[in-house]
Length: 336
Image 1 (cartoon, rainbow, N blue to C red):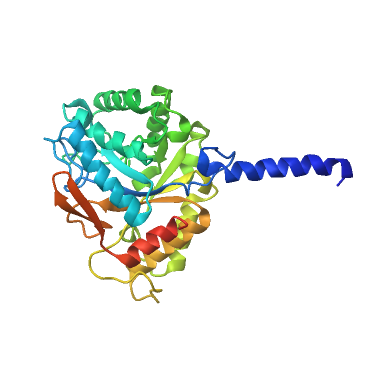
Image 2: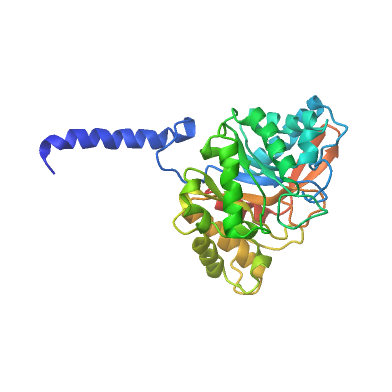
């Protein structure tokens, strides 16, 4: 190295280090991992495949905007205090967004983002179809227009055009997702999360398509997706292989396992418990790859996979963690 270049290069190094150090204070690095997403799903008790308005656990269609915000304040406080979460994934559908309840539903988004949470809004098809395709394209575009017009300018809101588009071929799904990007150009690409093809499984086909440059990619992974795997190492390999070279853009927006039956996720499974192997493997690989994870579900009443139980009534709500060892693995996946 030439001597006169050393001060210049040293200055560049200090600038780079300052950029990384300032990331948590609002300075975006040139190349970033996604481990800044530490999240859970907040779901409808019926699951998010519903034909009418979506009603998240603890909320009601009779709630006003202010009541929804008050309830969300208590729920977000529980997620932050109990888990260290900073992200919540919430569903949207046409019935919710086009109806009168939308005015109240937005209270959950507004309160969560005001509390510093990232909010991922994802389209879910109705219960009467469940075919992995958009129920009605004209309603789909109208719904997202309403959502984009309201939240494109909110830096804490992220847009996931469709949850688990398994009814489409890879090419057809990519064409629809690319059309989404063209239709809502006011939404920054860095805040669009494109689902992997199938059940959010095939990310590389999305990452390899230049039409999605600059977007984030979504992966779903569950033990029941591949029951032939029995070790932590095999689940680590499954996640790594599906993401390939796109770890810096990838998120696991769903993964989960039983949390209410006393199962111990704190010790290696030794091939004796496939769910323990799954959780530990996904947590470890996510941490090593630097990818964010969003657990399914954080809140969904009566779901055996839920990480948090919702207590109380009205606006007097609180959360309790269902599994200490499960929580620790979730936090491990987040790098905490």
